[in-house]
Image 1 (tube, rainbow, N blue to C red):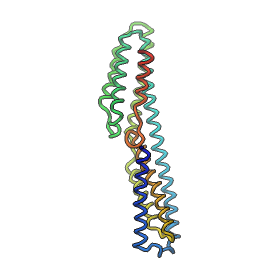
Image 2: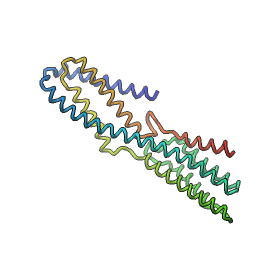
Image 3: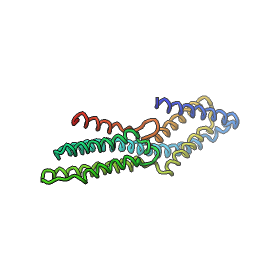
Image 4: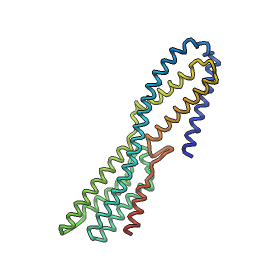
Length: 255
């Protein structure tokens, strides 16, 4: 369904560009300028090469960031699960229960929000408070033997890893394409289509097919870039499923 909506938008814009090409050819009689098609074609070839390189770079960049954010979310959820397991070595059922509740409270806030705040370039204040509750719980741990001291150091170290992963995940989730690069994508795409719309065609049917195909590809690529640049809104979204799995594992394995 998501892909279908994307393709429908691409087809609609393609039809519009084909209609514009036909109108321009009819009104301006562009076929009379066939003598200039060589120089125009050379310019379009050079411009198209540069456009293709820049666009490919943008696609690779946003796709890489999308996958990186997904990986960080997995690492954070797995880190929380490991943090809970480490608290079991304190041999303190009450502490284990409090840690389980604290982790569940933090994870459930993320699960319920479905990253809607990040989709709007905002942090979730409630999840931040819940995460600090885990830190406060660790800070207040009391122990009086070497065994608990070793466990405590491991717990603190693991919390530090989770915290670093969470910070990196938030920073990358809020990062977007630079405004200049974003503007360049739209402006260059517009001119790329414009050159093909006004280009002289001996066979207008051939020209319409070429313009329609090119428009379909460009509009689809732009939608793909826009969607991957914000991984929490659009057609393909990153979900908080890893946190759901972590809570499920904790509940099933440790009750």
